[in-house]
Amino acid sequence: MIRKFLAVIVIISILVSTITFNQSFATNTTKESNIYEENTHRYNILNEQINYKYGRLSGMCISIENTCLKCGKVITKEIGHKLEIESKVSPTCTDSGSVVYRCKVCKKIFNEKKLPKLKHQFEISVVKEPTCYLDGTITYSCIICNETRTQILKKLGHNYVRRVTRPTCIDYGYTIYTCSTCKKYYKTDIVEARGHDIHKSVINGETEYYCYNCDTF
Image (cartoon, rainbow, N blue to C red; front, side, top):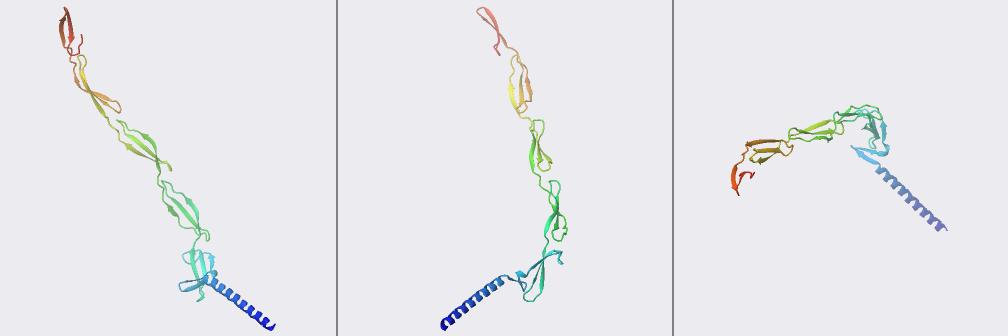
């Protein structure tokens, strides 16, 4: 009985030692994972304290404080402002815009930031075709601000086609030029009518007159 009792005590001691070691190892491992070093200092991230107040450096209002595990010095790091839009004027094609930011924490108003003008977005709105006499135009309108721009299309000029009409016995001859686009025409090289070339002939006792040029009787 005594031997069995002693054996049980030994087993219990071993189990308690094992559990204690595992707990200690887990604690040390977790603790080490929270430790980081920066500029020769050593910190525990769990000790960080975030302060939302106007800082001393660069006017920053959010800062983090932590105590070095080596030297005990309290280090403050200025982080920045938590900005939100206070007011905004959207830009257009003709005017630039602006936006003003305000810190949500310390309420500081920051300088106005300029927003560049938008680019025009032109689309064709009106087309006037050119003619032989007049220039044409293409009008473009911006779909954002309605500004318009005009492109000139040079007039076409006439495209004349030449046709010659020869003179006859009774009608004069001429050359006519007609524009294939607008149908305007003009005549030149006028030639007088030739007149009839009458000849006399007697057939079966009858006298006949006829023109050599046009065969007119």
